[in-house]
Length: 246
Image 1 (cartoon, rainbow, N blue to C red):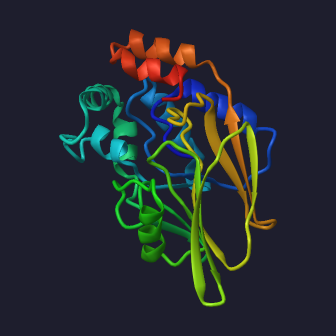
Image 2 (tube, rainbow, N blue to C red):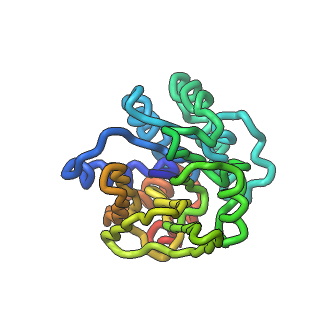
């Protein structure tokens, strides 16, 4: 999962949904906080996972913890990062600062990062971006976040030739069967602030045995999350966008 952005209501919906599933570990791809009104609740949950979670930091994690100025953020992101920094309790501030910079190898076939594999702040939107990311890491499966858009890039090698394809992932439940002689860049989308015109919280389960990916979109009370943002004094636009997945 990726990009919770302090949206406790969306995260709770995902946790209720995943209780009916089987999984071994949680891989979190960054941006636990920023934008949303519940940073301490989200960080308390992540901290409670202990060694059963693999975490990389996102750009908002870096700025909201005071490790970076955020001068490059837009006005609303800067306001939210300042608000978050002022409200993090001491334990969560230190925990957030401890998030490692990606990429991180989970095993010889799998790596995770926030942005691109060569730059945690770089976005992967195009096949050109994906090609650079593939060249930076050797792993078969590279999971990334940052764009808030569920996406699959596949790099197939056959008879000495390579072909790179991109696919946007949509729908309440999408199943991907991975193919041999192919490498993958996979974005599971955003839990707390989707930007693909679907307001449902997004997460994925990767089955390393069957070589399948299950991507889910979970409806949640986005209006409640919006109200929390407005009541907290954060910019209303940060709540309005939750209603539309924009």
